[in-house]
Length: 137
Image (cartoon, rainbow, N blue to C red; front, side, top):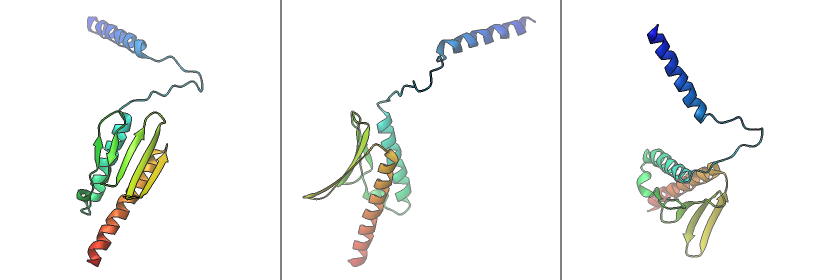
């Protein structure tokens, strides 16, 4: 009996602990989105890992930097020409590709999935150019 009573007291303390951290129910449509400052960096790091794994199979991962820089606005450096950056204030993403000294392509989007697709296509295009160049030489 004493053992059962102790377990009940422990459960009571656990319930009290949970009640301290339980959120009150929110009214419909009153939710709050909390921005985590590292979430942009984490997304870029995840993308860099995924790209490295995907293109390592064909030997292309060594041709790209795929490095994430630190700082308040993290950036993913794809290669010497392409960079993905987060604009935290606007909540958008930007891909910049410097093709040559007078040509720059900039893609802005609030949808990170669109940015990911564009970067994959960019890398496939660069790999295609490299293979084509090797075949022609």
